[in-house]
Length: 107
Length: 84
Image (cartoon, rainbow over all chains, first blue to last red; front, side, top):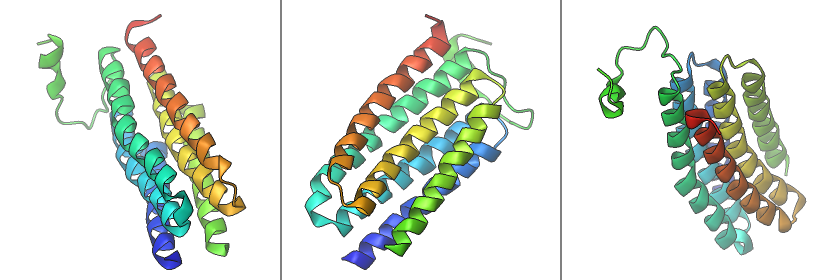
């Protein structure tokens, strides 16, 4: 039980570190938003579930926290991306496509 | 316990990377994205700290922190989109 929890927690911690590295390194807002949302959602989920596996008395409250993160993190990142796009933050010059203009009444 | 300490150090480095992006981000949206990422990382970090110190109350702190940062991020996004 202890080794399984440590493996799951280590997987989650690796994803948390990679997501933060993506936020630090990638070139514009939308790429950073992708790294900072997907990686940290999976990383936080696996970390909290791993702690719940290592300490079985804490499992249900850890599951509640993990499900809350899984439900609300995509909502907040979608709100941030939509606000950036409508607020006129420019894309990186290496970006090849922007399909969102037709939804906002442009073009 | 040694491996849990190593996990805590790695998550601390992740928080520092988000903090650097928050300080040097060119626009306000960059800073908001960095704060959102840092809030999620901190939620997981509080649960790990609770396991490291064997304190059950850290899970409650983590849950309240997750709720408050979600509300704060949505409020910041609404401000960036329309103004106050």
